[in-house]
Image (cartoon, rainbow, N blue to C red):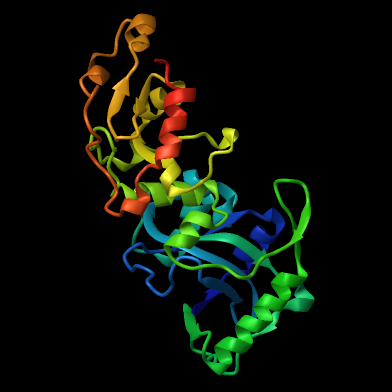
Length: 309
């Protein structure tokens, strides 16, 4: 297992401590350099700028994605570590003085299940940490320094308690499975869901192939309010108008990945010609990985519980 220790701004960290979110976006001011260090589920730790040479918390890596700042704000809002989109853009411009883009592309490291240590539990950086490190450093859990660091992190996580959605209090589980299994079983948030689904469909509408990113939305097949999970197989990327119709039940996708349009769209709204042109056609865009296809059980649920047959 790899462990990434990232250098971070104390204001960003303290903002998130107060917020106590279920996910965070550890953003980079530039989206040109892809973060490739970790697999999904591996630990991504926060180290404050010198002279406060301590590891103060972290999260579990989900995905890297380069997004316009406006979409990063839509997906994560204050979980970006700032109070507004304007604040986010102003902070990006501090690092990109020559680039005054209206909506700059930033690198988004999506982290699930973040944890923040009380001041008395901050972990001193390992002796191998060099003073000239600017962005971060990788540790292998099999190495002596990496094992000591991970043991210290697990000890602090296991001392913590969280109130789950059930209302019960239970110890935080530090033993995570990595890779695709983590994406399927980890406790992902709405922002992570949006990024995962957007990238799974290669940023194209599943029905139309539309690739104008601001009008594409990650739709839950089984709504979160109906206990549908924030998982890739419970999502489908749709153009915003199709998302609305999907949520209202005027269109659905069958378990064989064919779009169906309800006759009630025309009956109730006296229109819908554009949408009926897609009726009976297979999805135009699908994920490359079979594990990221819409789940049959979720599609069946939508057909039976939402679609206006």
